[in-house]
Image (cartoon, rainbow, N blue to C red):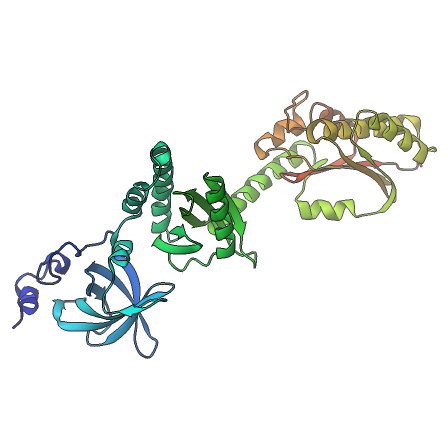
Length: 412
């Protein structure tokens, strides 16, 4: 009976990776923490989930459901994969030794992991950064090391959630260090970011969207020296989607509350909904406002286009248009306005490309008299709400669209 069989009977709780017999002790023997998750792929292409619990340069101690009496392939990185063969009599339960038969690389093959590959597999991102920082100029070593370690701390947390990846960039090539190896990210954009970070010798961050528009990545590039650096890549698609849903729920709550308070005279709409509103009816006139003298000119043009309208109602429309385009000029540097006719409704539309009104400011910006902030509609909004029969509002980071409806009845 071999030692592993005896151990299974006498000490079933003994951990194989803590046993010197299981994998011989030495400087290149390591118990990675956490274990390295891989797949064992047999000759028929069937994949078995596995964890490398302990390793040296010639063998892996692996926990897996795969039959130990077999030959498998383990893909470690894009151009690095390893052929292994199980040793059924060495190990117990689901943990066995797998000998390395061949290491396949892009450049060459061998029968063992080299020192660099071993350290990439077993070293934590923090340890790797400590090693990299040794080669940085002294005056930038500590600030860059602290910044990258802080990002790696975040990436290791995200790695536990399987959304992060840590890579080293050097001589136009990326090497995977830790995290999710199969993160399907646009490497061309990642390389552009790293080249910029190295060229400018400064930390750079960029959020990019995949070519199919289905994935969003948060990329962080940190230069080590003029020719190498570290890249942290996070798949934030799910985070953004959750934030979007939360924002929509929050916005719907504001819509319901504001609509109820104003007797449905003020409606908060989405971008798609407001586009349908401003497309209705036929256009009467349009204009732009970029300077203060454009405001009286807009009022003059309205008077000309509505000559038969009751003076009081025309004054109301001119006043509300004046307040709306004044806000566009004040808070967004200018904008566009136009009038449309829908049977007995005159629709005044004012649009700008400003930063919009924050969701948290919506209620006060639209309902509180004299309330005004840089991103609000200002105190003139209460006047518009008083005179207009209905108001539609859509606002966001790409701008604000304000629609004022006036019921003309038989006045025009």
